Image 1 (tube, rainbow, N blue to C red):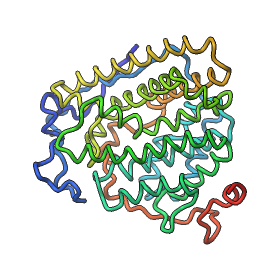
Image 2: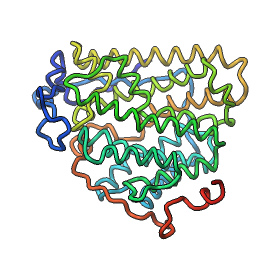
Image 3: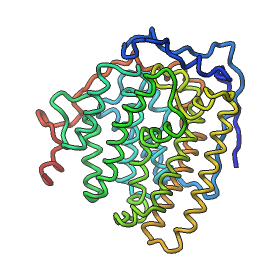
Image 4: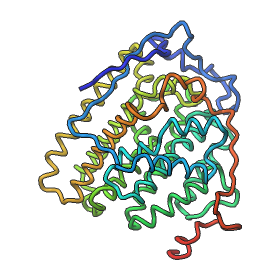
Length: 392
């Protein structure tokens, strides 16, 4: 079932979407200026757009300590210098990333859900400030993304840490302490894919037009960061899956369907702010609109696809669950929590995609990033002390 909420916003894509996202032929797409940015919908193009709200045939849930989880995540951001300026502090507060973790991992123990909340308040700003809400390509792009991969590969920060690197090392250290080596590598693989496919997303935006939908889907399910989030859902429920269970074709299909539900619904909910981003603006809705649909028709088409994925997930889950182990049933429930929890976060908690803040939140090109030493970091240390010394 789909409920619609009516939002005012720029919908000037219409049947001329391509002109709104077209770069001038021969433009210097690597330039770190705004000269070659795509045209944007004019104010006179604004009209009312119905944005779908999705419902699910299972109940939602919330961690009982949601408020303290939220406060803990904000404290983590402060400790690790993830607040580049005062206005950004207010932006983190109204995004409520801790409550996203509380909704998506409602049965996790307090320690694990806090690690995951801290991950979310790290991930969203890093994704915005390294990829989505900055120029398509800059001299810092590769340095930032490879630094995130190196933390996973070497379990240390680099000689010249980039913004967010200390926080990322702390998250990885705490997760390594909670997960088996094999389980952590599932999570790590998803994050390596996030950093790697960010390059494919950038390449797509350096072209005059976007790739078609099937190619976009292949990029989207990895740049979203959804797979690493789903891959710890079993630990947050009844315990980790065995590698054999995790890699069953039906389980991997369920994982992809859950990923699609969250990613594609997010494309609907974020389309208006993404249209205002300086360097990353193609998503499923805008690609469909560039192919001749009005923006409303594109929204409705993507919404229908989301609903079809919800139905398909539930049907497949019902065939898998009777013979599943308790841990696998827990993993399936964890994926249900993620799909419903994300939607509830959009509906009731976050203002990340709010029309009210598009003008101030969509463009982060002017944000200056510094890499302060985290509060409590031992002087001169590049490793995250106790774990590295104990295990390597």
